Length: 249
Image 1: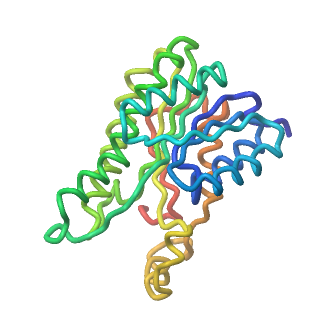
Image 2: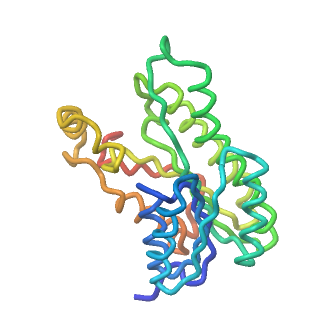
């Protein structure tokens, strides 16, 4: 089968681990040139760069804080210089600072909103000009099932992920006439480095509420991202795809 993303130039934020790392890997396998952002250790990032370069496409890491408006615009400029166009943006960077509202600090609320939601605004605005110029583009925003249904102890995270959904639908309406698509993915309980730290009892409790009776894998989210980044989804925009094993059914 031919590569689904051959020669597409793609920005992925927060790709040094978990879901972002798996998306970067799959996209490189599918022929994409990849610019990925990180704020982690240089050694870890160089390793990932080399890992992705083995697929024979152009790969470059950029140390950039997606929650900074200026940094996002500088990133887009740097990527354009290096790659000449931006075809796909995957807004994946995100953090959690969970707590019950009565114990949540203003700082924890603001930081989660800034990294999770404002970063989506920053990067989307930053790639707008090149996408409008080429009259082509796919923007993929990582939301969450808790952005759809809420979750006790995660009011900041839920609010940020719900805001991403509203933003996604609005951008799809604004940019559809220019052939720029914008969709969101809402992962459910996905097994990553973060969930490995959870007690087994918690994982079992989550799994029992899922019709497919298991957590999802990073591959499940990466495969959905591949569909949205590729021309297979050329008539799909403004949608929220729940990758949750039926949890929201």
